[in-house]
Image (cartoon, rainbow, N blue to C red):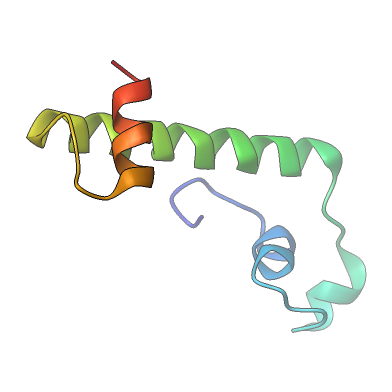
Length: 72
């Protein structure tokens, strides 16, 4: 999340922290911040699957195999 420039308040919320600093009292995660974070996480997820698919198009693990084959 640091690589994406995720605001500290949203990082804390994502990690389950209710209150970690003075900043937590004065900043709030917005819908746009959440959308941007989810877009960034989805992009990294898809990139990682693509890289894994380059190593091998399948996996003996059923869930991973399904994900790898869905992107072909």
